[in-house]
Length: 217
Image (tube, rainbow, N blue to C red; front, side, top):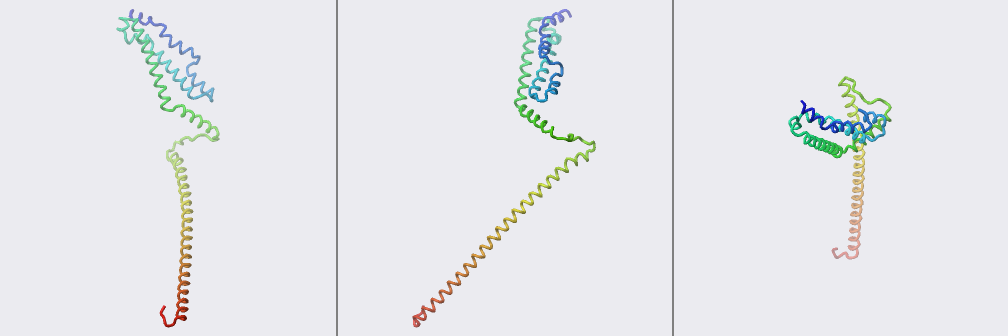
């Protein structure tokens, strides 16, 4: 017991360093949440970083040297100074690894864009006079309240598309009929031209036969 007490007393600065870092921020517990409420226009990413920083500080404070010495009593008993060095390195690596994971979450999750989108949705919600939707407690009513408007919207969409197709079909039918009328008119003109040509040939034969009655044309 004497050695454990001695090992715990080796690093009073470390056990207090976490508390010192935590207190120097000037933010009490749950301060980030309160500041987020007091400052609605504050960047959500800054609030997130502040919360992560406070959580990391508490984690480092909980990983104090006294707990380390209690868990690794044989090492601390044999070499207290080496135990202190190991604990310092462990705290440094732990803090660095956690901070890297937080940065990776922010980067890979595109957190800045998501939080900006949340700000935009919150701003839009201010213009909504009525309260937000809440479940009534009756599953049938809740399902119908969601599905019926959706299916009504789909039905209206199908009707619009049907009217659009009917209008397009009518325009195509009109174009087809116009083409048929043009073809019929062209056929009539061709037939009239053929009749005129036949009449011209007949007149030519009669003229030739009158001029040369003994010869066959």
